[in-house]
Length: 265
Ligand code: SAM
Image 1: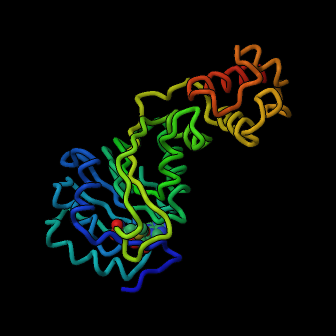
Image 2: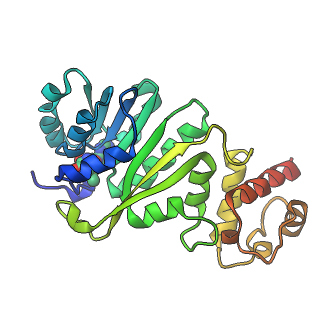
C-alpha cells in the first residue's frame, strides 16, 4: 500500500515500538480504547494483544479499512471500525466511557484533534481517562514544556491547565515507513480532576493570545489593547509588568485571566 502524504501516513511496522506505546497507555482492560488512524494496523494489533476491553478505530482511508478488517478474528468481538474523518466525529457520543485514546496521529491534523479533545475535557463530562499520542517532536515539546522554557506557549498552558502532561519517549524518523522529515515523540495527557486554575477557557485564551502573541515583549506592553488596561490588570494580579509571558507558570496565567474576567464584568 502506497502511503498518502495528504493523510499524514507514516506507518509503524515494528511491534516492539507499537507495544512500547501501548505500555505507556497503562491498563486497557477496563477501558474503551480509541485509535485514530489505524493505517495498516500495527498499533491496533498491539492494543488488542494488550487486552483492550473494546477498541474503536477511526480511519479515513478506505484502503486501511480493508486491512484492519482482517484483525477482526484476533479481536474476538472487541474491534469496532468507524470509517470517517476523526475531526468530524464526536468521540463522547461515538464511544461509551471510560475512554482512553491511543494514536500515532497524522501530523497535519494532530494539533487540531488535540484542541478538539481539550474542549471535550473542558466540557467536564469525564471525557477521557488518558490520551497517549504520537506527535512530531516539536509539538510534544510544546505540550509538555515548563515555564521559562523556549517551547512554553499557548498550547503548553492549555494542555497543562486541564491535564497532567508527561513526555514519554522519542522516535527517530527511520522508525516510520516512509520516514517523516522530523523526529517524533509520544506524550500522555491525563485530565486533572479539576483545572489548575478556576477560570473560563474563553478568558484564559484571550489572555494567552495577547501575552504570547508578542512573546518577546514585556507583559505591560503585550497586554495592551485588552478591555482592561494592562497596568491595572497586572497590579491587581500582583505580577511584575516587566516579566514576559513565558516566565509565568500555568496557575499564575490562570489567575491573571480570572482577574481580567472579573474586572471586565
Ligand atoms: N496507526 C498507524 C501506524 O502507527 O502505523 C498509522 C498512523 S499514520 C501516522 C496516521 C493515520 O491516520 C493514517 O492511517 C491516515 O490514513 C489516518 N488519518 C489521517 N487523517 C485522518 C482523519 N482526519 N481521520 C481519521 N484518520 C485519519
